[in-house]
Length: 110
Length: 115
Image 1 (cartoon, one colour):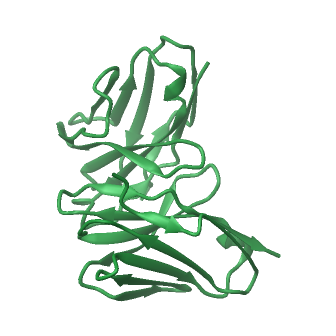
Image 2 (spheres, helix red, strand yellow):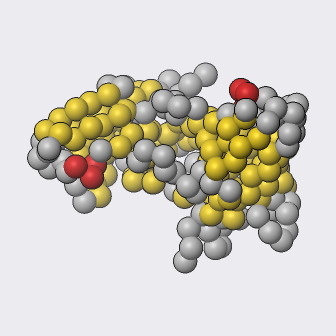
């Protein structure tokens, strides 16, 4: 069964605004990872957050993890046109299986 | 340090032909994963290999699909007797260790079109 599910499916915001994407999952995980995919390209790893961590930062990215709610969020601050892409969460369970969600398509408007 | 390389980038096959997709992991990475992506969908896990061993092939169809990662050379995903439903983007990723504990680095993908 699918593990990570992103919400919303699509998001359009003005350049400079913050973008928040959420990911919910169903079973226990070892870690959760966020990836970005530009159209027609491979995935780029953004952040890995372990199950015993609550928050992680990387530049303009902030990821939170709430294991009690089985959810994670990815916040992109001060968005730029180059942030336009699809964003996927991927969960890794004890069997070392990585399961990807269907992604959130983010569009930054000029 | 070159990233994950995949070739070909685009592959067109007629129904019934064979498709052979190659993946060279990042230098120092011994774990290789293959995924399939349909348009507007996320990635679906297919198979996980380490050098000369298939660790987990639970996501790969039992018929027509096979994968290998020889001691020397790239990992190969082979699809025999392709059908239209095999049309998709196939991505390879590599990591230093277990994917559950390490970031995966993805190649640019091979887009397979079956006519």
